[in-house]
Length: 178
Ligand code: ZN
Picture 1: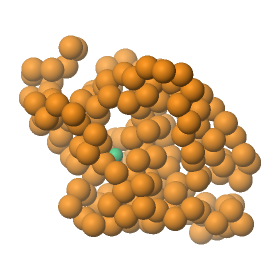
Picture 2 (picture 1 turned 90 degrees about the horizontal axis):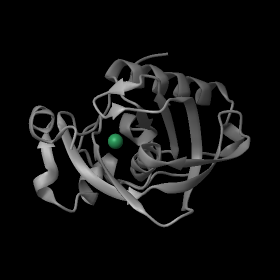
Picture 3 (picture 1 turned 30 degrees about the vertical axis):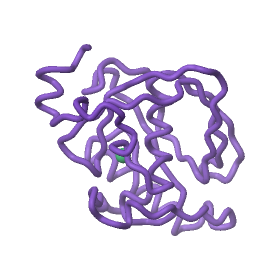
Picture 4 (picture 1 turned 90 degrees about the vertical axis):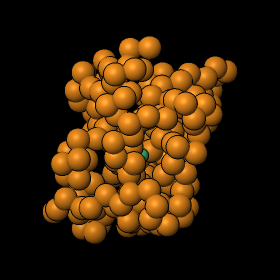
């Protein structure tokens, strides 16, 4: 197991749609190593989510773990480490919400993005079981941000007001708490 390198914006691999992960390979040694590497990489980089394409693995897998309650995003609800294989998002209620987002593939930057804030996520867990969960508010944004990576989309693509794209220091100085 190892910390993998997170590739950054400008690497064309971040822009390629990822392939569905073969269901019959869930639980294989290769799969388990990938998941553990993603967990170690997430921790080493200090993120809350990581998609496989960010470590140059072109499959539809993401991990999310929100364990701190105080982060650069403010106070967050916890979401224990979980693995999302071949996830599908469905908005379940009207309403968008905007949050400042950051990305391990766009280090040092933050941007304000509006997204649906009530969603359902259908996915396979790390044992291959079909699961469904609902997410609201910031957690809904985290899911959408991570799963966008599986389609080659970065949050910067979704910033409508480019005056709300900032370096992290300037975000903290001028925008945090707005
Ligand atoms: Zn990201």
